[in-house]
Amino acid sequence: MIKTKTFFEGYTNPNIDIQINKWLTDHPDYIVVDVKFNSIVVDADDGVNYSVFRDALVIYREYENV
Image (tube, rainbow, N blue to C red; front, top):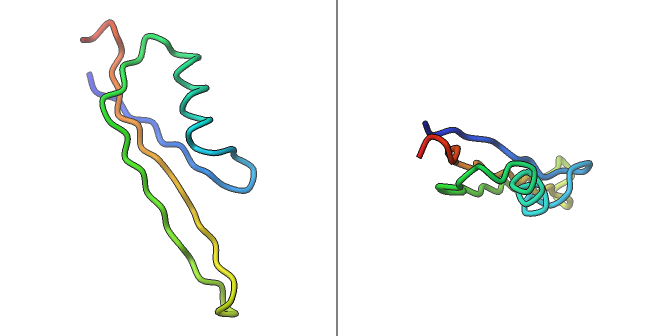
């Protein structure tokens, strides 16, 4: 069975690659099928500042279900 997990990078969360690697270390029986990255840039009201929001969707399956 194909499953998914979403990771978000933000002010309190570390880089997405660190999160994914830690998650995979904790779950060695998962096989990654694909990773979809997404970035969104949002302008602030002042027109000078902006924020970048990043997320990743990891598509995986458990080793037992291969």
